[in-house]
Image (tube, rainbow, N blue to C red; front, side, top):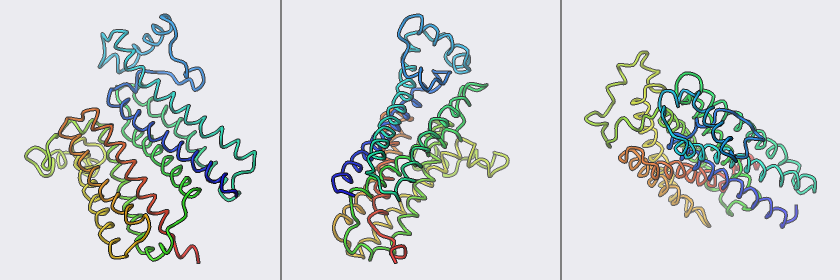
Length: 344
């Protein structure tokens, strides 16, 4: 493949990854402003346009009035108030459509001009399939809040967010593959690959429970740190039956689990950084290890700030973005440390 083609493909993939990053931030604002249930229909094509007349706005508002959120939470809301929450959900969906276009159209162009290596085509199609699944999952999530309770399923919210993170990680990893070669002699660091993978796994689990916290509004229960008010372990844990389900469904215990997973992730990444120093890594690798260590500390601080602020929209949104930055750094490390066994 020509060098110019590789650079163009890499820039396109990084642009798509950044668009997904922005999408996650918009999604966080949509959730934090409780705007996600303001549009009660799914029109993938026609829905790209916002209401353009007073009649259109009143029609959308009348539809919203049939929803559990209006009936049980926002009864008496005015049309101007409705427009504010409508904007964030509409913009969230619109940006999803934009991402689909900026991925699919260049993909078709590169494909038809035979600029894509044959071995990479399944990966490009896989990401396209993930994007389609994400759109379906988004509506599947919203539907769960339009039946009886004015809240989406926290399981579906977690699936929706994890799909976004997976798409982001895939796009970023593919962009690295088309733009950067592993650092020379980085194969010496192959013993660290297991630690990097373990860090990614722990970070992912932490993100899943973070989504559970968001879906259950569990961040509003105990807003102290390191204790949960006067408790190290929430008393709600043992009161829940069966106890094991408390870790998935009882809000206080879900927040507690997220805290523990976050601390384990921080310890794992810091241990990875410490171990890396013994390998005398060269090139950009020392900076990447240090960046991951600093990012996990910053992310932990953002989590505490979000908690102490009673889930203020600014630290909460930045906290979600920080999770994606940490994920990107760990994926970058995995890219830069080759798997010697596979090369042999």
